[in-house]
Amino acid sequence: MRDSRFLFGPLGALVLLVGVGGLALLVPGYDPVRQTVSEIGEMGSPMRIPFAAMLCAVAACILVCAAALLDLAKATGRSRWPAYLTAFMAVAATGVGIFAFPHPLHNVFGLSELVGYQAPLVLALTWRRDPSAAEVVRLSGWMTAVVWATILINLVPMFRDPVIWPHLKPVYGLAQRALFASWFAWVATVGAQLYRTPRRSAAPA
Image (cartoon, rainbow, N blue to C red):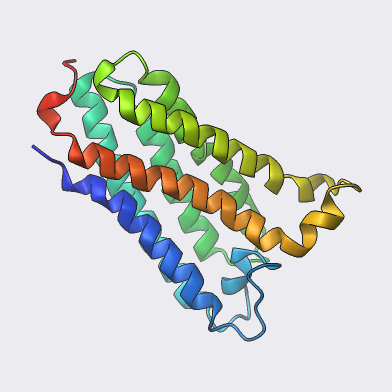
C-alpha cells in the first residue's frame, strides 16, 4: 500500500520554487542574485501577503509529508526523529512567513530552521540499520553533505569574514537559495522514493 501523503514533499518543493521565482518578478527592482528570499515579503513589499501565504502553503505540505514519515517510523520501528525535525521545518517556515522582516521574530524563526535542516542527517544515522531503508539512507547521507556545505556558506554573514564576505555579498541571494534548494531537494526526493516503496516492503517493527 502506497502512502500518497509522501507526495506532499515534492509538492511543497514545487510550491516554493514557483512561489519564490514568481513573486520575485512582481517586486519592483528586486535582484534575486543579491537579495534574500525574505526581502520578497518584507514589511512594505507589495508581495508581503502572497509571500506569507505561499510559505504557509509550503509548510502545510511539509507537515503532511512529516506525518507520513512519522506513521512509517511507527510501523517499522525506526526512529521518529526525522519526522519530528521535518515537522519542525514546517513550523519555522510558517513563522518566517507570518513575521515579515524586520520583525524581531523573523530572524528567530529563520535561525530555528537550522534545527529542521538536520532531518537528512538524523535519518541517515538513525535508519541506517534497516536494510529496507538503504536507498533513502544513502540519499540522505549525500544530501546531508550538500545541506551542511550550504549552511556554512550562509553563516558567513554572521561573522563578516574580511576575506570571504566581500566576495559572497554580491551573490548572497543565490547562496541562500542554494541552502533552501538543497533541503527541499532532499524532502522531495525522499518523499518520492518512500511513496514508490509499498508499506509491506518495510522492515517489521
